[in-house]
Image (cartoon, rainbow, N blue to C red; front, side, top):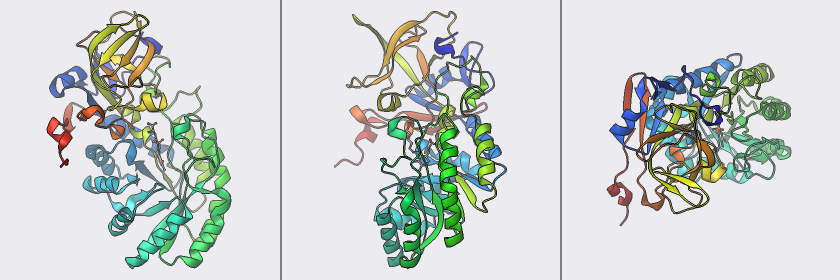
Length: 439
Ligand code: LLP
């Protein structure tokens, strides 16, 4: 058994077959050979499976899943979700542009974010988005002004900050009063009343909240829904709002310290003895949301794509220092920044299944000139060698979308696997791409 008890299960997305790690029916080492490394690989089947599971868990309530595009904005991933009837939660004109290019309908897009520019507001108004999810009174007034100048009415929801502790990493916790997001719970009703009286180019269409990301317990979701529900009902009565977006945030399992082969991991849910399963999420929330006469929006990002993607990287060197052994790989923090930024854990799995249980304690590090450029520290891993390719697991969400050209490194390629079929869905950048646009 590998470190941490990790063993990919046979049923979903990524698994060893005849000793070789596969994505669906495609051998990952063949992809590394064909497309080079670092390489993002996504399992289309896993994405669809997660979408369907969440959709089914919420079947008891009038709902729409608005995929949080920031988690993975590759056009082919978006296109897959368009075929499932997904809506989209966007945070920039760029994300709206991508959704439209992927065949998505702006009328099923909500636009979040604390700092929308005039150009973004104009673009989204012209495209006819479903709702601007507004984060401050100042923004609401500005939205009214811009819509007025265009002789339009902007559909809007205000994001309520419910002041609930999501108990997640401090950088991805958003629902506390000290976070920059949303409008204080206590101020919302006055704001809706003033908007209704004073802002003729705003149509108050809904209310929104999002308490944080990578939640691993259902309790904060329940707390936020219970806290905000009476407010939402009053807003419905007074202003005829039609939707309530409860945000995203459903956590996934990153660490394979579960019983080996547990399919729950690949389904993006924690096993029954852990605090959050997707069935539980539905079972707890549906009864609390179903009879409100409101359309419930959910904005999942990580849950849909997180465990559906891996980053393949080749080991370049092994460096034995006085204190540590470093496995130096060809991916860096510019390709996957989660370990550096959030101390994120990604399992590291050889493409060839190890024949023994033997492990060595290593740091797996990238080539970037930063001490924070590591994928793990002091972790017991199979003793993979220079030349070998390993997979950084659960890299489908906030992986490529947070990649950069730091150290003038071209961005990696992305590949989508569906059954036996492999599609290159983004070319690796070239050196020329690095300087395109510079004068
Ligand atoms: N809705 C809103 C308003 C959000 O701000 C977010 C994420 C989501 C939905 C989707 O949340 P999810 O279901 O994916 O948890 N880069 C970080 C995560 C940042 C999340 C930002 N907002 C990471 O890699 O962990």
